[in-house]
Image (cartoon, rainbow, N blue to C red; front, side, top):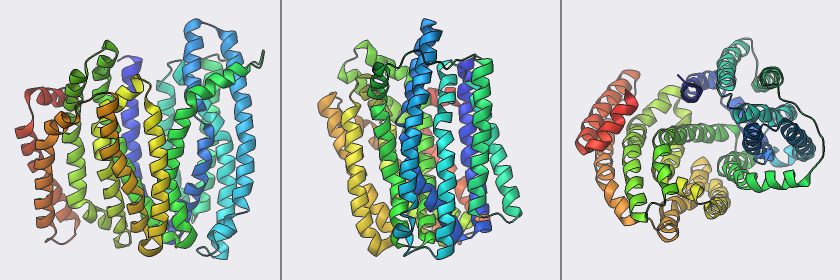
Length: 495
């Protein structure tokens, strides 16, 4: 097995361990901390998450430029570039401290109506530790970027898997010893620092990378930020979409509400992550046609092929969540978190189509046409926060998620399809015609089973039986709807 296949396999193993581990450990953390303490942990994590965007996409730029210098065998140029990158990170560190100070002195103003005195003091300590944590994790990401640029994919992935497994074990251990949310934050910071130091050792000793400033060239800074600016904006949009919702809720509602919202967002993000794995498996070969000057008709046909295969898997997961997701959440973390079901469900509805249309996104990347989509996402996220913030005063976490998803739904399902139609001439009518039978069949099955399942009481036995019956129906329907090409694709991926 070559390095790329090993790296891909390790990436999927990491994702599986992370998602399964998250599902297993989350109810345990909630049980040990309590709903209010877990909500505080979620709230401050989301609050500090704003500062993580100060990376400004620099890590991605490091991957690109290190790979370039390595190909050119220019060790001096690489050393100079990396030294300049560290100076930029030093500047980011100063910004981090400044924003951290501003956040610290505004914790009372933002959360005094929802947090008691003890929670406010704990929130401040968590904030300080998380800012220090970010102070070394942001530049620490550069060392992983260097590994990627050197095509040394395997070691960082093994290290990341080891770190996550160790974290789960240590979290369980410290919670059993009576630790609270502050203890988890301290543990995460220690683990991050330790694994960054190990990565630094690997970069310096095994890859023999040097950091030496020969000449500070502003052209490097310009090139770095011209490349990373849209990556930065994507990161900014992500923060606006989800973390801001939790922070806004935390300013006028209790921490339990924040926890409910956080659980729903976590499950929704698990779904989008799963969907993006599908795209990484299916898209690479298909996207090559963009560079072969394929006609819009050919591109539409290929997008439809990819989307149909994606939808069989996406709708299997989505439909399963619709019919047994509410039961799962009640059995998993308790009735308190029932509204997390609706939050996750709305996120999934918004993202099913854009994930299925990942081919179209790849065309935009290949043609360097991401600016419109990025700015549109930013605008939709800001509008969503305004609407969601307003609705949250009357409808709490449900109001927040409804406000967030309305602009995103219009953007993903309507505006972007009009953009694909008019900008890159994809035949959107033909595309939806090609996937209509799948959408109709799955929608019908989901509605029927959801009605029938609602008659049965919630228990682990009923949950397992419902899941098995649903899966059998999906396999039968999928087989009947699949053409020869799709059966071959699924067979090859599963073999």
